[in-house]
Length: 166
Image (cartoon, rainbow, N blue to C red; front, side, top):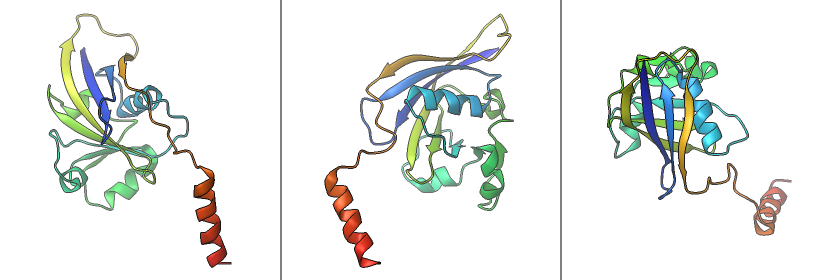
């Protein structure tokens, strides 16, 4: 069985990443759960993985890549014309990833948490894991809050906006 070592970082936040090991029999839904835990998320949202295989300099190549998405988002993604698979039915092995390849992960389509996932290493084990193997091996940097804190000034702006439309 293959074990993948992924380095997961969040776009535009330097010195923040997680190393996650995942057995090839895990699904992308399992990988999502590990990332969710690794970055201390608490509120679930839809998500998608984009199998770009390399870094992208713009969003266009990411959005045109094959998609592995939340089961409730499969039909919507098909409307965009991409190759689409359900995350709960697609294993990590199914993606045919190689070392040094990159995939992109988008969590929470409203708040747009974009992640870069690099395949650091793939090892083969002699023994089969009787169940799936997921492990957060290393955490560097504090997780950003899932939602920004609002201060009094933010609420005043909201009240001003609200008064305009009463």
